[in-house]
Image (tube, rainbow, N blue to C red; front, top):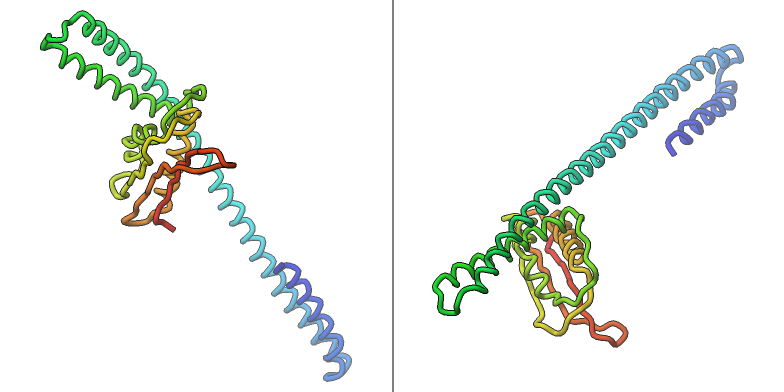
Length: 236
């Protein structure tokens, strides 16, 4: 490194002084010149050493600052996740009550009752609201599901509103979903969380006028049919 180079430079200057100066000057003149040269070289080496030490301190301070910023960001994200989880649970409880009463009212109405359309709209809106709360719980990572049989294309389609909110208005999001080709067994919460992380990483890699493509494709693993969710972007 640079420190080893400076030490070598110091000893090289000593060697050259002892070999060259006595042959060019008298003994006393050589001794005086060697003294001055030693002082000059040592002053330069000392100054460069101080510069290296100062640069090292600056590097340590910068590294600690970056570490503290990452820690604070992680703590803020954890707090936001906890708040989102609490809000989602409370909201989900309210929606469950509304949907339950609407479904009970539907059972007591005849097929020709004009109120059925309004009640069915309420049930549908509650289903959409429950999907939003499920996405919030996925974001907070506080909800865990047992593996279940699901359609990956349908799962990505349901997650589209959440993904669009994550990428923002400046980035185009395109879905390329294969037609239904059978169900897979997986944890929907973990799939959505992984998908959200991939989309956010793709968004961060895009500068301007970017596009993210989320594709569900057929695949084959060891001769067995399988499915793949692929996230690609046109960023760096």
